[in-house]
Image (tube, rainbow, N blue to C red; front, side, top):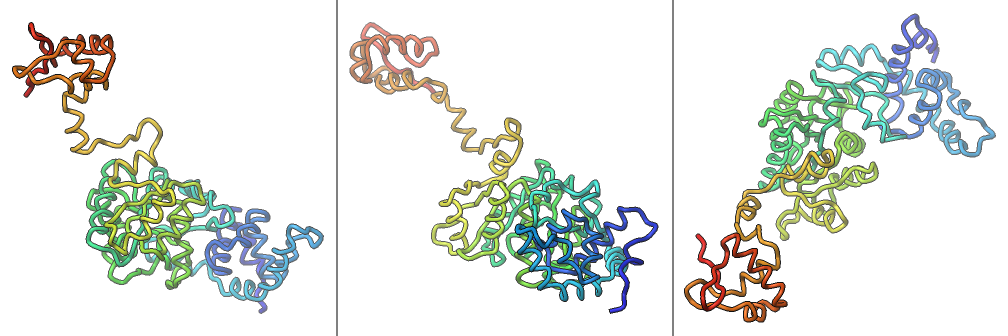
Length: 403
């Protein structure tokens, strides 16, 4: 190990470039969201952390007499060889060149398009991200909703996910998901079909495609939306990397909508992460007999917001007072019924009166029939008469026949 770190990291380039190169090296030191590395970078800066790791003195960054740092110091000492070896093997120039060939770029927290939402991850915040697509990530995340769910989804779940995503996209919201089979893919396709914005967060390098059958889908997302990866180019998928990327999906949306999830599902992990970040968790109900919806039903029992359409999602995630749920056709039908305009007392009195032409009641009789005081009924009859709901003849009051 004769490599000297200083010529690589200390150059005539700007401090921004030095920081960027150091972060590229640290991507290889550990898996995404490593809390120890994140804490060190936040405290000392990426260049100093890389220099210490390459020199085998990472533990010396932390004072030996600080009890609060004792666990981190011991962890650095235990991991010193692994961290050093992995950093020495890093090649930032190759990573950047590979990403560029795939049409991708590398961004760090100092860049304008870095979304502030990711800062909420704290010690699990990414060191940097590879992005593929013309869209800025900050702009996409500013008004985004995450949609996740089962890979082995039912036709019902696929339909609902697509409709939700299309409805969100039509209203100017971006749809964030993980590009997996099932609900993820349906959500991305729904947003694209509505000519909206969608963001795919990968569990592999930005230059790779997973699953293999989604080459066309991910290409379409890159063309009209944004593909995101936290992993260095060339990194293959693994089970734990799916779980790591879920925290990005949870953070990039204003809230997370779960559409179909079994009792044990990675989507429930995303929902839990969203809840820990203070983001709303929403769930779509499914048939009570469907195993594919057991997880979503449990979320609802645990307090997740039940949603069935895009406007309900927007009402929960949007700006207070401006993003309200639209009425369904049934709501609009019900609100058009004339009786809905009556106050409760008037409606009760009207119900107590016989139809016009059959019989009639005087005020006292109407009061007895309605179970109200005569003076209250007298006032209500006056209101009903003015609005044409009742008619009075020599026998008393009766309800008018209305179309």
